[in-house]
Length: 321
Ligand code: UDP
Ligand code: MG
Image 1 (cartoon, rainbow, N blue to C red):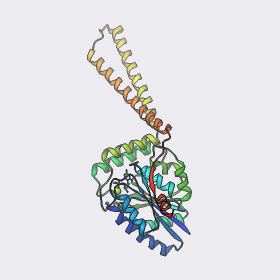
Image 2: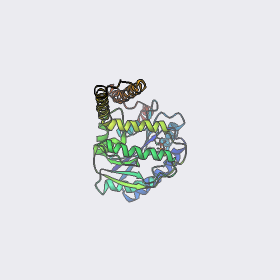
Image 3: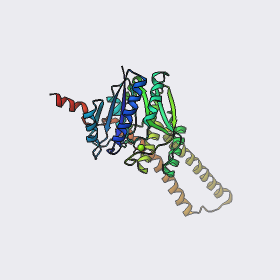
Image 4: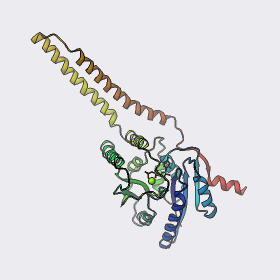
């Protein structure tokens, strides 16, 4: 038998879950015809939803014992939900996918084939288009991927989705990365393993709405840069060196002007501008250092990545005795 865990992070997805469940079970039975020994578990991670997500999942579980869930005590974010899913998955293989069907279940057989028959450790998907997404969002997303790939050693693919199938070995490697500031796309790149990339056209979500505002995405991008690159820190140093050199030349210029030509030193306003400029750059560099310090601070607290309020296993135990 070969068990495939389907991990679904859900934050306020009560409308999307029924569509998703129908689609994934259909794909599951198609896959069973092709690979007879495959079994499924559907692991829903309720990321502190404040709608009826948890009850929707519980209802599915009543009909279908393959459905499991972990419910968080509050909203911890998608990265934490994915971690919880991988940690609780029991499968020989695990796949993470969104509840809104933007990760088409129809790709799953091809992805499964890659890890099962083509000896890949992982098969991941990337969008080749961003149709149906706000233009400004696509623009910033593109810039972000260009920037982070220049700055960091982890190689992060533009348009990569979190829709990815992995072998048990890779799942264990990810769960072992206990960092609190999680940037899953960077983690995948960092741990290595060989990955097959499958491209597809963007699909719009079936129901509900996106949980990402512009600022949430901005924060996510910062997380990625700070988590996987220390170049901003050395940038601060280079900035400092450059500024010192420029001001040194300026001082030299003034001295020579005074000694050789006897000009009186003047320019109160230019002085103020320079002081403000230098102070600004200093604050900027201190800000960068502060960002890293803040991340280090959170990391040293060793807080749990998520807190589960209830799981399907708790429920089952209660019922049995
Ligand atoms: N999600 C989550 N926690 C969050 C935000 C999102 O678990 O704090 C889930 C969400 O329910 C969905 C997936 O992550 O299954 C992707 O979210 P969304 O569709 O809003 O993002 P987009 O596709 O617009 O990038
Ligand atoms: Mg979506």
